[in-house]
Length: 140
Image (cartoon, rainbow, N blue to C red; front, side):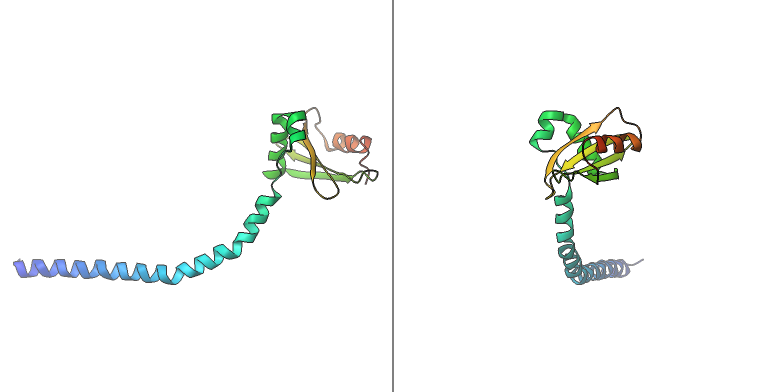
């Protein structure tokens, strides 16, 4: 192999690398605005999802401690809302959430503001939860 042939291989390799860099740069230039548009379009939905997360309020933490945080996990992380009832006298709404065979309660004002949340550790069935709701005045 001569030096001239060896140098031509290096030139060819340089041209290939340069061509790949140009193609990648062009792809980024073309797709960048599209990706940005998609991200901007999804931003309101992401913000709404963050607003929908339940956070224990001061009352829930003071009254129920870490158990209020555990209850929030049920409502935020895939627990199933098994029952919702309204207390017609005061207008508050009670929701029962089930996660990993554990029951959690969330009580909200009519406007959706959180009143409290806590586990119902001794309850095992939906019937027990429904009876608790009814006995607490949540009948509708």
